[in-house]
Image 1 (tube, rainbow, N blue to C red):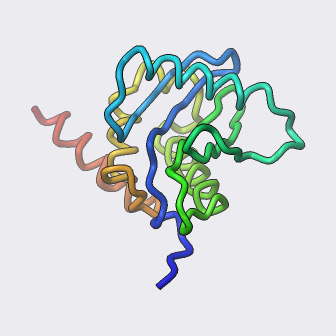
Image 2: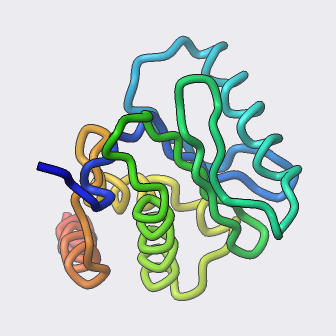
Image 3: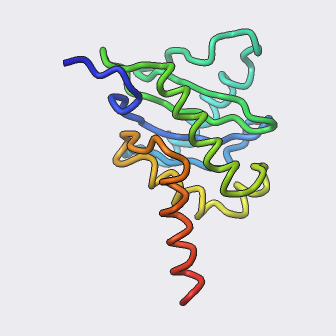
Length: 156
C-alpha cells in the first residue's frame, strides 16, 4: 500500500535559520554527535541559503532529502530520510503548516519571537511531529493543545 502524504516521511531534523545562516531552532530525531550536528546544520543552512529563488526547494544531501522554505528573514529546513514513499511536496506543505501555526500563535512570526520563545516552538513542533514522523494536519487542533498547556502553566 502506497502512502502519498507527509505522514509517510521520516524526519532526521528540523532547523530554523536566519538569513545569515545562524541556527535559531533545531530539533534532531536521530542521535548525532554535537560537533557533527553543528557541522551538519551550518553546511545544510549554507546550501539552502545560497540557492536562488527560482531553484527547486529540495535537494539531495548525503543520505537525506533536504526540503526548505523561506519565510521573511528565516528559513525552515527539514532533513527527511529518503525512501520510496517520500513525497517532497507533502513535506514542503508540512513546512508551510508549521510556519502558519507559528505565525498564528505568535501573531506575526519573527526571528526574535523564535529566539525568545524557543520552548514554545519546541512544544508546537512536538505536537506536530512524533519521533520524526509528522502527525498534525490542523493549525487549530495543534494550537488548542498548546494554549491548554499555556493555561496550565499560567495557573501554577
